Amino acid sequence: MRKTVQLLSAASLCGCVATAPQPDAGGQRVDPMPVSLTLEEIITTGVRQRLHDPASAKFGTMLAGQRTLNGRQEIVVCGTVNARNASGAYGGEEPFIAKIYPDAGSSFELVAMGDGSPNGRPVGKACQTAGLPILGPDPKT
Image (tube, rainbow, N blue to C red):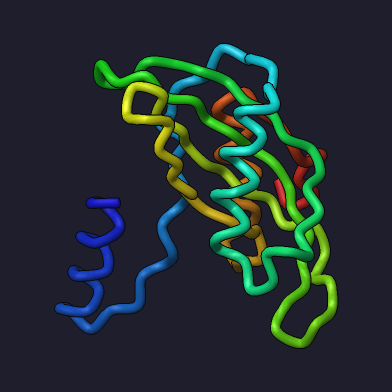
């Protein structure tokens, strides 16, 4: 988050146009783990809070893994969700990447959602780097 703010601040100060920062799964692979009902509830509740029509959300594949990064335990989750957009139509499955911190009351952080950027498939790539490949091979690579 701090890197994003710094990049945006630097771009606005110099008047340059910067490319969007890539979502970061921490750069370290995770140890795969099953998505329990409790974990699924935390994920779906957290993602629904960021949707235009939360009740319409249909979740697809969800993969999770755990690791310790900088002394902090975290669970990285990658998945897909399809929900109605502002016009009331389903927009198609959108990938997401999130982190859950078990040692902080299972707090939820949505790192990024969607791969419709001109930079390729940043969420899918971040998930693959973490060891949680939710999408098929990228035709652009």
